[in-house]
Length: 404
Image (cartoon, rainbow, N blue to C red; front, top):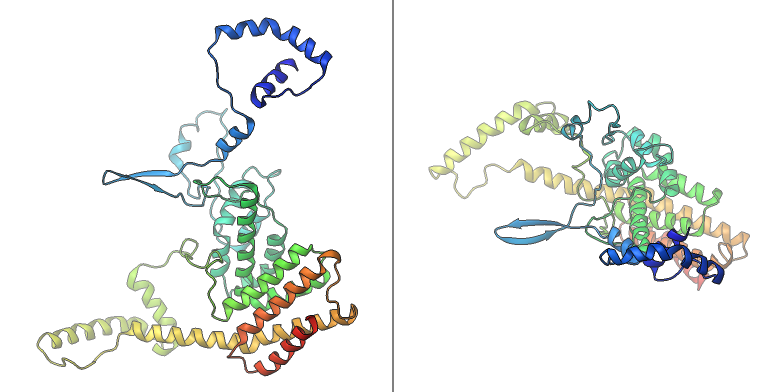
């Protein structure tokens, strides 16, 4: 105990116990040992806070290119998804060395859900599993949009997102983050993950969230997070872009591999209704047409006249038209339905509380203001395309007058 107290004093510049009798006995016990200190070189000690800060600081990669040193941020993924067989072969013959378990990248939502719910106390690979789930979970949900698999697991994924903690959350290895900054990054990921769920299966996700908003004993912060998720999901599906939402860019890292080159394009063309099943034939036909047009243009025939329109331009035009149609369809059929449902909920709550909104104690004003703000956000998504915009405007004015 005296030795432990001595080490603690050296590290923190203060004694652990400040008791006179204890200090005398410690000095008597340590006096022979202190004589040995003269025979050793002085060692510089740091406080525990400095040591912790050193451990938390992550190094950045240094790349030398063209005799110039450049600091490059490491990727946020902290786990190794690939299996390095060479690293473990040297220990295969040693029975005393435990073989390292490699965690693979999930392919199905069932595996993703298992990774998100893995318990570090029961699973030795829980940190690796959760790290992978954090790294690709949002993108994986987005590429499953419209699939029956997502519909089947949507409620369990929402519950997992709301209940999980930041254990295994991957950090950028060149930054020293405080606990508050880590919590902020994790909450941003959680919100983006829930938005991915709502935008990929809007009706089932929103119905479940609104039902749980009324029945579940959620905290105020969880309710505010759910309302924010609903509002931002409506913005995305209405065609508005919020660049602070994670996982909307690179979806290729979790997509299955495609066939190479023309083979994959041929199968995509076969699925096109406009080609009537002649996709593979058209590949060769378009190549011949292109060669013929190039030959004619080389001798000046047809110069200045458009004889062939690029199919890529046609497809891009169709995609833009399709996106505009999708946004308008969502606004008219789903957005307006959600808005009137939330307005009806607000009116029912006001009837029960005599016009005071949600009654949750000291946080009532905060929750009520956020609910009205999300209603305003959903309403703004309907402008100017919604066919029932007049009715929505009347309801919005009533709500704003009632809370003013």
